[in-house]
Image (tube, rainbow, N blue to C red; front, side, top):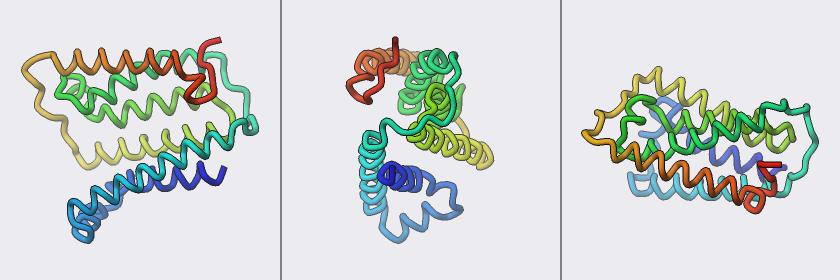
Length: 186
């Protein structure tokens, strides 16, 4: 489980740099804009790789509690919504304007619903870490006063977010067992 924990520290740590006042600007000053992007990307990729490897190595781990019956249903509903929000964060859309922080809200829904559906220690570490990180980062974004972008003129970005998010959700549902070792239906 050590690889999972190290991966979470690296991945969520570098993604938490905005939570440290002046931290991001100090890193950009020290490494330059290009160097910062390379370092940020490298740490993110290594962290993500360790998270995946660590989760595979830790499975199965001890069950901490009995997950509620509604947990799987919550994940089945929340994951497509979270994927649409994550895609909307990267497209000019009315969704992005309405939700304001769709990436963080999507990660919060994804991790929270998976936390409700999983009670295995490794899953609790994984989804619990992402849940806490996204909640803290979302609160910090609202405190900073980050504002939503100006809404686009058309609805194309919204259609793209919904179609791509739903397509990814269908593919993940179909291949979840093969990708993550856990069947989501049945």
